[in-house]
Amino acid sequence: MELSILIPAYNEAERIRSTLEAYGTALADRDAEILVIVNGSNDRSECLIQQEFLPQYPQLRLVVIPEKVGKGGALMRGIIECSGDKIAFTDADGSTPPHALLALADQLQNPGMILGSRWLAGSIIGRKQPLSRRVMSRMFNAYVRVLFGLRLSDTQCGAKVMTRESVIQVLPHIGTTQWAFDVELLFQLQRKGVEIKERPVEWNDVTGSKVKILRSSVEMSFALLRLRLIYSPFKAIISLWDRTLGRKLFNRRLARMRSIYAEEST
Image 1 (cartoon, rainbow, N blue to C red):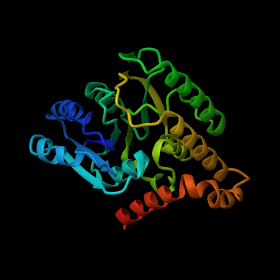
Image 2: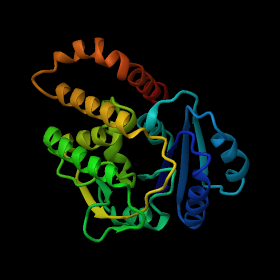
Image 3: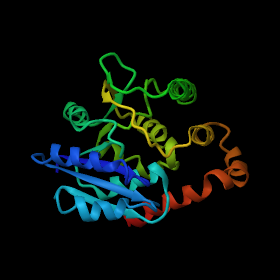
């Protein structure tokens, strides 16, 4: 199969309908599949997809994880489950339209990864994020550059495409779920020498996000600091970290994410 598009979904029943309609129609004539990975949801997401979309779009598949494992855990499960030679990520809110994501996929000709960037010249931004989020995005990007040396302008854009052979080799080394997953994936790919490119993208801010910006920013910052310590001369600090801060912030999700990988890869 040429392409698998992964859509993680946590309580997205109100926003995912138009996304699935658009992607289902766009992929009708392509050798491609769409995997929606519903995790920990308590709304109608699973029922909606089963009753309305699976019968209508044969290229659509549903993966259900009962526990809330975060964006990273959902995407890791999707990578294991999917069949495409190329694997693309997109958000359930439809912020990246199908033609924009497929354009990125068509540009990926060699092993590696292409990121959509909202900050490159040539990007088409319809509805912008609120100013507060744009400011935090730039601050976070600077933080990532300092910690990891990732010379990328937009690690958090949901539109990403990679070859299976590139991502599968780093999957066992990824240990952070939720919103720091993107950075850890890019960092691990960089460590393996995988070529990572950025390209302009078409993108629109969509209201209704479940992300609590302050809380997620704090969790993400701590998660990335932990990751940086693992790959530093101060790795010994991690055991103390995990017994204190990590116990409350990360350990349960980390254990569940690792169990998902172990279960599906055996």
